[in-house]
Image (cartoon, rainbow, N blue to C red):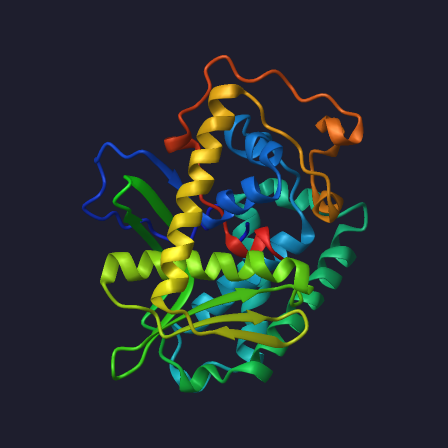
Length: 301
C-alpha cells in the first residue's frame, strides 16, 4: 500500500483497543527508524507533508484494482477487465485526494494517459505471475494488530491472505516496483516477518508462506518462516521501539545518510545534506497515536 493509509481498508479493532499500550508500530514506521531516525521524526513527530510520487500513487492504483478484481466472478478476472478498471480507479482516487492531479504538468491529459499506460503494464505483468481466476483470497487489504506481552501494539495492513483447505496461511504482498537489490531485500523481508508475527500472535497460527510479488520486473520472492524467525523479529521490534523512545527522550534524531536519501522528500531539511531541521513541535504528539499507518507498497517500491 502507499507507503498514506489505504482509504479502501477498514480498520477492524480487536480487544486490545483501549488498553494502556506502551506504544504502536507499523512495519513502515519501524523501517523508517531503522533506515534513518531523522526520517522517522519528520514523518511521525513533525508530520511533514510529502509531495505525491508517481511511483507511490501507481502502487495505490494498482493495489486498488487488484483488490477490486477479486470482487468479480472468477471468469471475469482477466487482463482486459483489470485494464478497464484503471481509469475509474484513478478518477475515484483524485476525487478523494484532488492534490494528486498536481503530479502532472501542463500537458496533463497526455501525461496522465502515459502514466496510466505504465499502470496497465504493471497490471499485465501480474497476470504472468498468478491466475486470479484460480484464487479465492480469504482476506484483502486487511487491517491486523496484536499486543505483545511488552504492551507494544503492532499493526498494519496486509494486501492479501490466502488460506488453504488444511488451514495453512499464505501472506501475500504486492509491490508495484522491481525486486530490490540484495542490500534492500532485508527490509522487504522484515516487513513480511512483521506481518507474520502479528498473524501468529493474534491467530495462534504460524503462517506457512510469505510471498512478495514484484510487479515491476515480474519476480516473486517466497519465504517460509519458523518460530525462531518470528521470535527474533519480535525481539527486534521491541528493540526498535526502545531506541525510538530513547531518541524521543533525548531529542537526538540522527540522520543516516545512504542510498535511500535519493528518494527522500526532506533532503533540504537534513543536516547530512547541509540543511537544518525545524524545531521540534512544542506539543510533541504521543508516538502511540502518531504512528501513522502507511501503504507498504509506497514505502518500498
